[in-house]
Image (cartoon, rainbow, N blue to C red; front, side, top):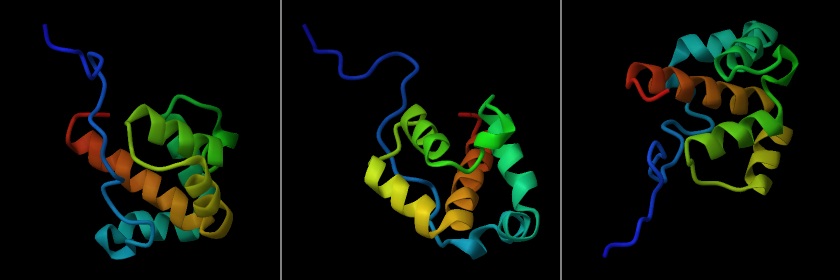
Length: 105
């Protein structure tokens, strides 16, 4: 009898599909984040079915990373949000958009 290592509907461990400072992989999202940050964070929260005020928080990043089994830690989430707030939100938004394209969101 084989051991079950993943639950049905779960995702294999992976990394974010773009880097934290991978601005030029999606210039549209980068511009959106830099010039209309509140709108982008509301978009992230809406995609995650959460309150608009939660869009770019450490908790939202951690919840997203956990939901899609993205490698990382609370410490890494804290550092990304604390020192690269806009970059962190843009990375999550890029990942959401890519997962929508791949039909795994």
